[in-house]
Length: 311
Image 1 (cartoon, rainbow, N blue to C red):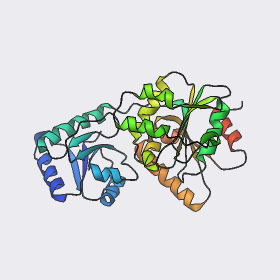
Image 2 (cartoon, rainbow, N blue to C red):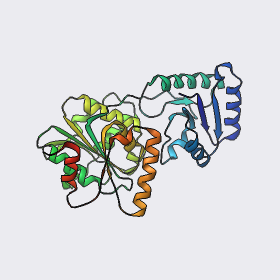
Image 3 (cartoon, rainbow, N blue to C red):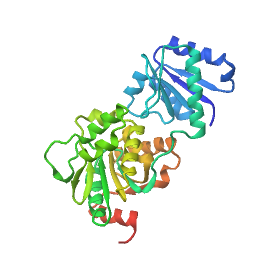
Image 4 (tube, rainbow, N blue to C red):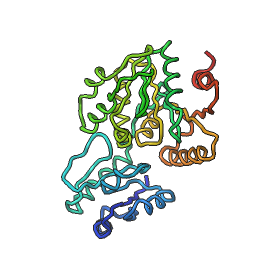
């Protein structure tokens, strides 16, 4: 891994002085680094210059609709400890030497592959659409079909989805996300009481607010998927990842196969191309997992054959 660092912070004086200190230290020799004070400039740099690590001011990171492709460390304005889910966080207003020492530790994690393991395998299928349309019905139909022969777990990240046409409000996924953000060790204990049983399968869905999904990180959703897989109860996991979010990206990283619901309209094609560009930057192997599905009357039958062959 190239020893390269990007710093994104709205306080230009702080960021510049921090980088100047780094460059004067022996242990930083051989590194390349750049400073940015707004997301637009950083994104232009990100497209042309892949880098090993981003040191990002926490508030700026939280406001990003699309999270950075590289490993990220957050600079927080108050004392904190590293969380097990989401980007690691360090205290912004400590000595520059202490910040440097922590950063070097994170570079070692990137080099050695720490935190990169996921539950990626072919038993996990994720549905995704760059426009956020049509995934719910097809994902649920596939899970229902597979549940006739296999033990299936269905997870929906769609804030507006009501699998099985249920009318009662369900907020189970929000409760799990709250536990993940609290760094709770109680996920395995909480899951059984939040899972709904229907159509011969077990399901987890329902959020209180759209923000619960949009603010859920890729690492948090992978932790949830690991927890589901580790129960050992399910032969297949079907995920409606829905629209482009950081959580959806985490599902696709973990999945062995990704069903990309394609569109014919110019806007849909443009979004699909942008999605592929970003995902290939994040994970060069994602293209091998993609199964492109065109809309049509026989979508489910076509998809079953693509995924499992003639049945």
